[in-house]
Length: 311
Image (cartoon, rainbow, N blue to C red):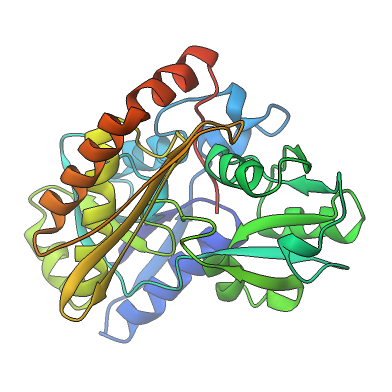
């Protein structure tokens, strides 16, 4: 076939992901080029994400390019994608997942517990904010925008005592020198799909689907399908303080999930096993809603707080 065109956001991490896929495709004898596409989320840099709340703000322009045939596939961080894709698209591959956990990064402190009273913590994620406040209600949590390099630079410049980042992103970029603590799902339940890369194509593009089939990782697809089913049942997408982490244990899927008020006063948790990813995720989502998660989410949306999360 002719040259394969990959669409990607322009951040260092997004380009790492796109180039990783490009290398693998070139190894199969394909000619590949990468087109950088600037999304709404990339353009809005002077407003906290919690004040924006635009659905698909990291994917809309890329999907438009895909629909118009300007690119042949798009490489995304899976957690950026809405749980229900826009009609006309499909996920040809969910690649082997990097570690989905969150990382505590600091210059001077080895863990969340070691932070002094009133320490300045950086994160723009409602999910992280809620769980941090439940752990350490004394912390001063401040917004933190920008790509991984920008956020780490702000940490180095002393704007924050610590920040929380997705471990997958800092590992892929080789920026792990400030990672001081890897947070378990029980302490900081990660975002659904965190650490997973997704390859999106036009629905029905059988030739491209064949080219990409080798990239699909069955365990990663099962785990993330389960997590996204929970989000879908709760009506959340990537915009709300919901965490979900599924993994295989003794041949079955185990799902830990959480929904929390951003102020940390209410943290609802669920843990269960199952064999059907969609049913397991849906059942867990239903259980969290029954516990009172519906009220938490109503409050979040009512405050206008919901916003997409970045790695």
